[in-house]
Length: 310
Image (cartoon, rainbow, N blue to C red; front, side, top):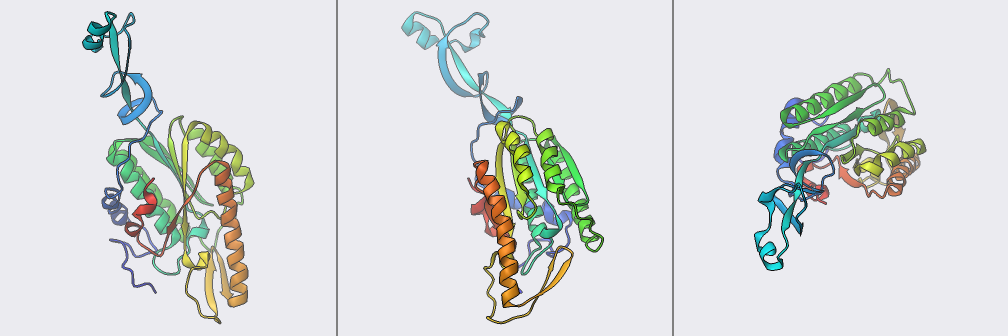
């Protein structure tokens, strides 16, 4: 077992409200970045729309209907022609989190289940959005549930996210043996995501990359035309081939609802299949011009903040 300590209030398997609230402290350590927002609601981020705001953009000739309070008297006096100042309007940017909690994420060899780390990451990104005054929404997807979260501001946005994560995570833990496999559950989730994402939103995909099919490309391509898209792949050392293992071993593995006993040869075969599916997701993201970031479930998220930077 890893000597790394559990994150605050976490046991690595179950998910509770306290540990997701504790992610607020992690979110405050993420460096602030200026970003351009496209959405048409007032907020704190600068948009590409020029009008009345706080940040100066340019000076142009005065036109009928312009507010006389914005006249640039210095330029007007120098040129002899009335000029008015334009400012970059402030806009709110909706943040959508697409959280994959498929059963393949309920895997952990050292510190946390990948599903727990995915939830910590989602909560941290959610708190970061709320701290900046953005509206927060998203979609939590699994084989047994699709929870849609309408973008909301302040505490409503983060509370619905944490409640949804705990609800779906708990349900998945209880249904390992009765899992109804739906190979298209993430494709259906991508279709839903495309419908609920408003133009100008920032969409974060959080997944282990195991269940995205070629069919997901069409709805995600349409999504990327009007929204900014980023992706995180939550990994585990055993599934990445980075764990320190002896030359000969018998390794018990529970992969979803499958129980396996892997020796060196069968492990290499299993590992190749895991990496192949992950690479399929990476290729899918590359077609969208998105470079996924990798988050290790064997380390607390607080030790991986550099991966949350742009």
